[in-house]
Image 1 (cartoon, one colour):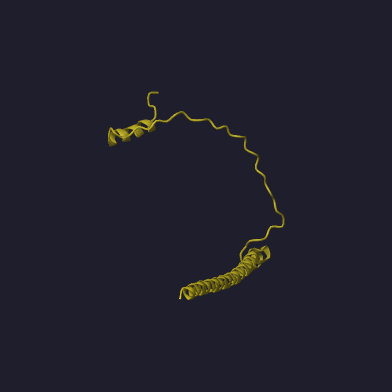
Image 2: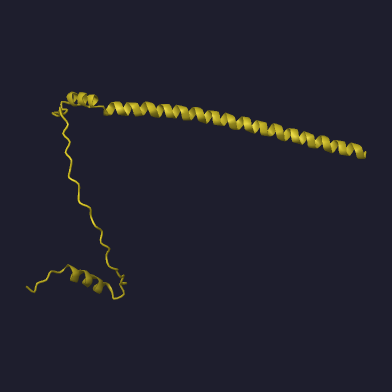
Amino acid sequence: MKGTGKFLIIIGMIAALFLLYVHFQVLIFQVSYAIEIKAKVLTRCHESYRRLKFQVEQLKAPQNLAEKMTTYKLDLQVPKEIHVLQAPALPPVELVPMGKTTFQPFSKGLIDFLGHWVKVAQADTNS
């Protein structure tokens, strides 16, 4: 019986290996099928995007806009010439670093806080 026990264990292990092999082959098949379906969906979406983009570009076309202007009887006209005006270049701006600012907590109360802002906003009346 000792030999048959080892034989049965070896047969069981080989069967388990074959089952694992088949299981992984089925998983590979399922994954490849899912990838194929997603690739078809992606191709369809990409083609739909290209078609819709083409339609949007057609709707933006100047000829189409001119037709719509005449259809709705707008008093607008397509310009015969295009005039481009160029603005002069701005001089370079030099950035000056500001002094160190200090943060003062509002410990004196609301009245001092409001008084601080009023003092800053008042004009000099001594003249």
